[in-house]
Image 1 (tube, helix red, strand yellow):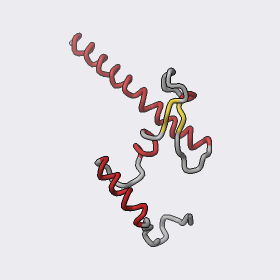
Image 2 (cartoon, helix red, strand yellow; image 1 turned 90 degrees about the vertical axis):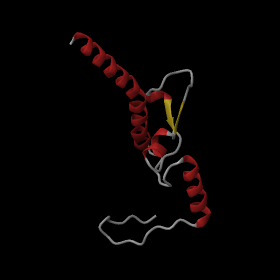
Image 3 (cartoon, helix red, strand yellow; image 1 turned 30 degrees about the vertical axis):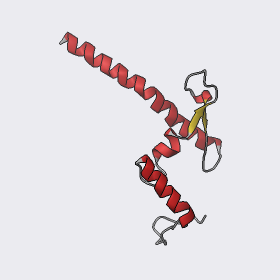
Length: 104
């Protein structure tokens, strides 16, 4: 892999057909674009270390990373935990709104 400055003109990267064809078919099947996005990097890329325990930093394992560095795994873990607990935050906001409307 050659890393270049973003301002440099580069030739487009072309995947070989043996990779591009199944990637495009899978993306079409999933109704997604054939790109590596947030959902693929984070939301579909983890598992619980111990399925009997809740989602937490010490109970989430990232399945695949680019660098295998701990910092990258922690970056992805942070997003997993935030997304998971975000549902609780949304519920709490809804409950607060209901209480406010009852008092008005």
